[in-house]
Image (cartoon, rainbow, N blue to C red; front, side, top):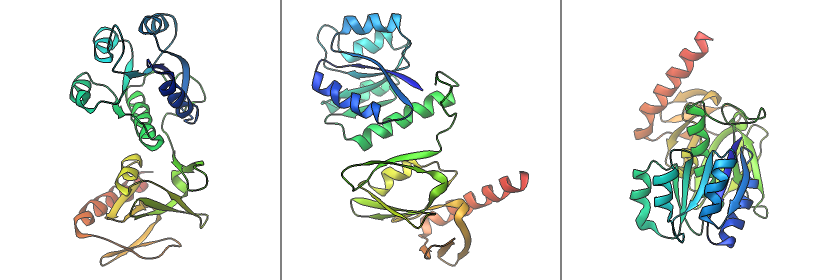
Length: 246
């Protein structure tokens, strides 16, 4: 579990981030505050791994806060101003979120944080934590309900304008309002392959490649674009070698 602190001078912004953190299984909100001085005190007294930090703060802005305390905690910057992005990334922040922050964009930042802590064998302080995330959370069309989908349940993904359809091993179609490229970034590249501008497939579900089409278990033929074919073949080769070694 990643222990989080929210520092923002607007309570409304804190309320939004609080809700988002509560909806994310591997994040735990330890505390929140509108006061820089209280945040400094909290860092010294509580175990904080990640801080969601507003830039426009009185007395000490977010960038100055990082300069002083960034060695103690990783940071996701939250702000209504895009012009500070370069300065933020120069300070090695996990991510830079522009307000108003949509939940799918928040999730991408949260997953970046999870990947960072996993790579560095750091924190993740509860026994319930998993060393590697084996699922994805998506917002569905059903009243904005958040849905957990295990990676091993996904057969393929189809992109359609401003949303994608995720087809599962249970013959279910789950619709989420996201671009296919955004979803591709959130799926582990060793398990999934982009084969077309409109399609992502699960590598282990591939049964054959027939010309410019990929065949999957219990699924229609999926077209392969030329620019994705070499990468697909390389991933298949790696998967076959890994299976042999096991």
